[in-house]
Image (tube, rainbow, N blue to C red; front, side):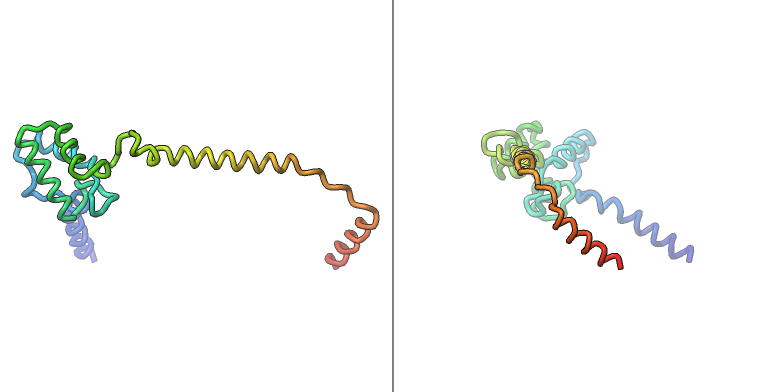
Length: 156
């Protein structure tokens, strides 16, 4: 039993680093500073195939190609801003996990605020309608007698 648990633990530890990042050793740069820059840049870029993962986490072949392209651009001496601009020119703002605020992305950034305001307006309108409703008239003696009879019958 203990051997099985120890073996399972070793397998998990061996596979765990591969579960978090998809960067393979052959992609990594020899210079640790450049590699750190490449990883920092790739964590902010969206995988165009997976769409809700960064290219640093994705196993898709396109994500691999973009990671390699980033490292090639860094070796060519380009800055992070130049590389990001190159990728945005090629793939559009969608490649950025946090797209910039500009007229084309206004709906993306403004939709949550607009929905919140619409919800608040709906709640306010509902509250105003409740206040505007006339109060109900009190029960007549005949209605009170019928109610008492109904309630009394249900208790038996």
